[in-house]
Amino acid sequence: MGQTATEKILSRVMGRPVKAGETLYPKPDMVTVHDWYVVNFDRALQDMGVTQLYDPEHVLISTDHEPVATSPASAERQKNVREIVRKYGIKQFFDVGRGGLGHIFPMERGIVHPGMFVLAYDTHVTNYGAIGALGFALVTEISEVLALGSVWIQVPETLRVNLKGSLKPGMTIRDISQRMIVDMGEDLLDYSVVEYGGPALSSVDFGGRNTLCNNPLEMGAKSALVEVDDYARAWLAERGTSTEHAAYSDPDATFKGVYDYDLGLMEPQVAAPPRPDNVVGVTSVEGVAINHAFIGSCANGLIGDLRDAARVLRGRKVHPSVRLFVTPATQEVALQADREGLIGQFMDAGAVMTAPGCGPCAGGRIAPMAPGEVSINTGTRNDPGRLGTTKGDVYLASPLTVAASAVAGHIADPRRYL
Image 1 (cartoon, one colour):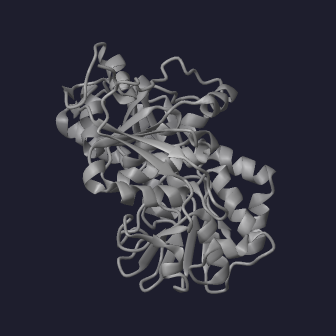
Image 2 (tube, one colour; image 1 turned 45 degrees about the vertical axis):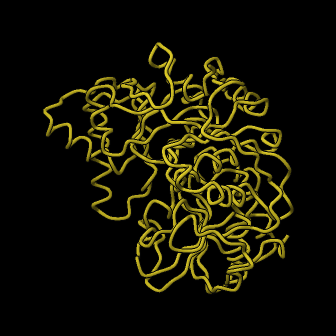
């Protein structure tokens, strides 16, 4: 019986064959933690009497949730993080201005490569699946991993998704991904790895692959993987990243389900409040007045996303009643956007640029909403309180739809602006 890519990655880690449903104590190739949890894990380790990490050489810390300290308390937390990093001898520390969003820049820099197994504090570590790495989120259990080197997991089943067809004008992979998780459903996605392949995969760029691996988590998936194809190999080769351990599912692997999914949706999709799975066609919510808009996050902060937004904003202005924030995911993305003149276009249109990282999606510390306001953005979630207040509505959409809405002053169909 063949194995899925997930089973093969975990088999390599364990040094023996494993199968779905089996309980393991795997040692990860890397552990990642973001700035908002470092002080917490240090406190937890102190409570356990732990004075050194199990394997500090394979721990990565990124300052991405609040790269710009917004208060004296924030500045103190950043100072504490730096002290904790020194105390434990953590070498892979990417402070303010050194990397950006920790779910993305490690792939750009060749720190994460295909076939790796990563455990993380934050749920969106699954973005590493964009290059065929397997990321599992553990939340508070990450303290035990830092102290002991492992924690138990169950090998997930895999849902195979074969992409076919092509995108229609005005459509993006964000539209497809939002619709897809609804079509697949929460019961099916629960604790599964979504594995993408198929003939249309070659048309999906690095940013789109991040989006595909990001959205299923909001419906209970354990992780996501994109098959390492010719596009990925070329992208990785530019960065000197090895594909030696890339894992591919066998033809006779056992899947929880196999689905052919057509990219040819006819209408841009919007997730209406209060959940990411409350997805409707844009025409169903067109005209809803907005006050706040945001383009960025680990779901849509890559260079292709910024190019899409710039296409709509070129020669136009942000509506007087709207605040539009644009957050490049990483330093590399920000530099590329500057080289292409995109940052100038955003600022000329009236948008506000924020430091590379999570941006407003991190919980409203940066550019929050006021009570009673409405936001449309490319963030990961739209539950009440996501942008700082529980008394406001949040809609999720593609960069094209968000940019069009920011110009219109209400939720708008981007096809009218292209």
